[in-house]
Image (cartoon, rainbow, N blue to C red; front, side, top):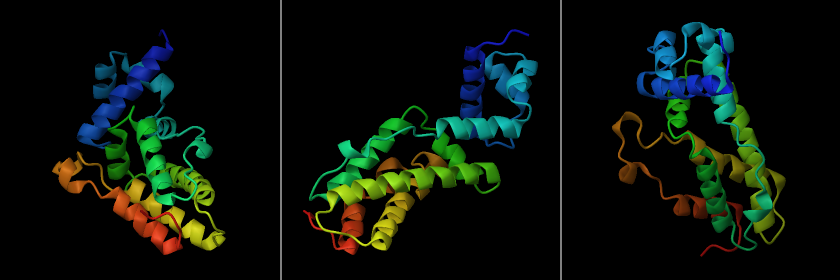
Length: 193
């Protein structure tokens, strides 16, 4: 059996598309192998179980890598800083728009997905805290900062994807500026325009 890195990527791409369309449980590995144009044995070479495939998919494609918080900071304008971060996260995750559908659906039934989503939230929360700390012009209590970061992360990660369950993008999109303003007002932060 000939292994190639391209085959592994094709398997992950096929799994991502099919899991998003059908759900994890309704997607047989034979369909993934067929769509990836690989023998089923090669799929199992890379991913011994279908759960391993899901864990790898979520683990690799949800990973943000390093984010330079300093370029997102807006001294005196924490609202703009939060919106900068949201835009940056959207850019990073633009390569995998259907991954959000998978996470939204599978986190309820797969502890591995739930654990990876929890790690993701912790990583994003740390960035939010750094961005807010650099953008607010006065000292902020650590607990207040943490709470604001948790709220922003919840807004960004817990909202359902617009294309999930027939939700129209225009109707479902929250007013992120208004939510950022609400969070910053709750911190007593300055720079609310």
